[in-house]
Each structure stands twice: as structure tokens, then as C-alpha cells.
Amino acid sequence: MNYFTQIFSGLKELKGVTILILLVLVGLSLFLAYSSKNKKTNTKILVYGGLCIAMSFVLSYIKLYHWPQGGSITPGSMLPIFIFAFIFGPRAGLIAGIAYGFLQFIQGPYIMHWTQVLLDYPIAFGVMGLAGLNRRWLPASVIIGGFSRFMAHFISGFVFFGSFAPEGMNPIWYSFTVNFPLMGTETAICLAIALIPQFKAAIEKLKKNALS
Image (cartoon, rainbow, N blue to C red; front, side, top):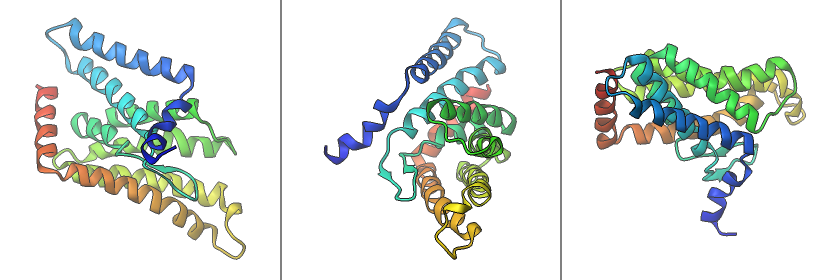
């Protein structure tokens, strides 16, 4: 199996129920998008939210690199949620992030404790919506959202996974060495894309159209 085949091999792991939810999200979003010419802001939030959640989820299963400690590097899978929060604000971003987290949990749950589940799924993905705290400059939103998700996984890492640390290693340092390279790289990819002038201009135009 060559590298390019491996990149997309994660899509074969998708469960039937996950695919069904994605199809419903996209279908509902497209239906709302084309069912009315005069769309209110709430309708636009549902349309953009459904599409951004679906895009983030699919991108999360396109894996550029599998991290030795677990997890993988994706082609900017967090970016659609960051963009959604950047356009519609933190409240909408938090709701979309939580929905995205539950979708990730349905697809591949890893359960050690109910608090760990909350930290690693609805909270970790939900706080990506804090990217909406800044709505003037997309790269800053990416940094806020990426750091927020890192902190949730970081706390979960040393509280619940500290026992996996090599003998003599501080659990806090262990969690940092596992989570920061992964989340840092993921955020850096999103940041690099967000810094492309043509991409920034396209998002600003999208934001203007979405809020008009």
C-alpha cells in the first residue's frame, strides 16, 4: 500500500451510522440553503454549521501522518470549525464544536472515565469554537481555537493517562510531550492555510455574504 493510499485509508473506517449522520447533515444543510431565497441568520448558521462539521470530520480521517504516540496529522481538519466560529462567533462555534465532538465519539470512542470522555470529546472539540472570540483576523482565531483544544487534551492526558508515562517521567510532562507535538502541528497546518492571502480574502468574502 503506497503512501497516497494510506492517506485515505482512514475513510474506510467510517461506521455506517457515522456516514448516515454525515449524509443527513449535508442533506439538511443543502436543503436549507436552497429552500428559501430570503434566509435569516439562524438558517445560515445551521447551513454553514452542518457543512463545516461534515468537512472537519471527513478531513480528520484523511491522515497525512500517524503520530507514534497516537493520533494523526490531517490536512487542516480543525479549520472548518475555526472558520465557522470566526464568522458566527463563539456561541455558535461552541455548539458546532460540541456536535463535532459527539460525532467523533460515535465513530471511535475511547473511554477510561466519564470525566475523561467529557474532556476529550465535547469539551476538547467544543472549545475549538472559542476561535470565535476573535472575529477580525482568522490566524488569531486559529491560534485561540487550537490552544483551547490542546489544553483540554493536555489536562485529560496527565489526569487520566499519566499512568502510561515511562517510569520516572512526570505525568504532566508526559502529557505535554504527547499532546503538544500533535496539536501544535495540527494548529500550525491550519495557521499556514489561514495565512495564505487568497484564502484569507475568500474567507472574508464568505463572512460578508454569510452575515449580510
